[in-house]
Image (cartoon, rainbow, N blue to C red; front, side, top):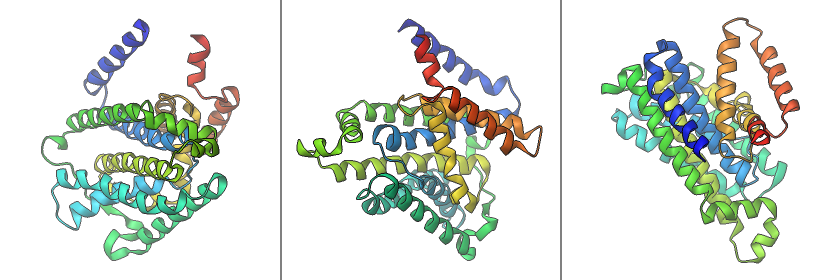
Length: 301
């Protein structure tokens, strides 16, 4: 326990001091790490705790990103209001999509979520007058103090920390333990009086909300949004992060996101063939540690 507390203190000190020790480029990379850590955690609520593999999770990340972009650029809404509304829009979309998806299980659930994602991608890609089509929406800027990269870094760090705390409380609440029971044996769980469909649906909505938060944060950090964030190629990203870190631990997706983003950033700086190299590295890590990178720590202590 003492070692855990010491590790948390060291991480907190590193997070606080990082913007003053590195360049603005690495400050942006750190923001990306925070965002994708939350993104992976939101998927793990479905996959690791609810036992629901979703290929369509990027839809809610993209809806959160496009939500804040459209509210700011098209509706002229203030950044603070747009940021508050974007995850709600993502959660509402998750509620609608989840109503149909949670009635299926296994690969059928996964493929239906993927179908809805591609529907969202098609709408965004074809709506040139509204979303800019394949040109996306550019010129997003954080307002006020958040226009400074360091200030936005701290804003993202605090918001992601709050979101992570909420997710931690959710998965360790009675609701979270019901999810574990549903993952293990939904039939028996239903026999003891649990509304299986409602719990799955609510999990889907919560995951969509937190993915929307991540999408809105990334849109402001990136200064633009593009339909590729909802395309089929984006489906693998949160799954790889989650599996790479470990789906049966809370911190696994965070570790996976850190490793994924850093690997991508470093390798792309050296070669245009980075997908091949990164694919080989991830494949080797998954083969060596099938339970995720966090299993290495667990096996040692």
